[in-house]
Image 1: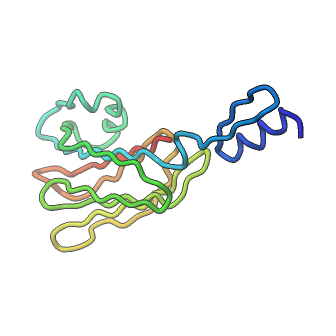
Image 2 (image 1 turned 90 degrees about the vertical axis):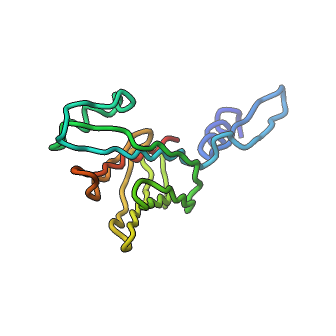
Amino acid sequence: MNRRTLLSAVGSAGLAFAALGPRVVLAKAASGTKVNIRLMVVHATNENGRVDKRLERIAKHLKNLRYSGFSLLGDHSAQLAQKGKQTFSITSGRKVSVTVLSRDDKRARVRVEVHGKKGKLVDTTVGIRRNSFFMVAGPKYKGGILILPIFARY
């Protein structure tokens, strides 16, 4: 096997290598197969036209919704392996569970569950493009709704 063929085979297996003269050293890639999940909790209302400065990166997507004001209530993150699950406590006793079902070069399949005081409010599986996000618009909250942008970076 020549050096170029070895590079291709090793690269596709998610491994890094360093060639030192005639020897080849293999090591696990630092990133592995984990997905960095970020969950934002956004309150959307029509009570004002203000957009929280911390939401500037996603403001153009929020403006497509039928609300004029957006404030950031929470920002959570976790690094999850495939089949890894993290539950985040959000406002008003609600909880959001995020499970990474699988991932490939293009997208991560993620299960999102939102639980309220009376049980499960949302249970859906979404495909989130690599290094992008998906928004779950959900339960009513203080004259508006909660919006949950979920980012998947890897």
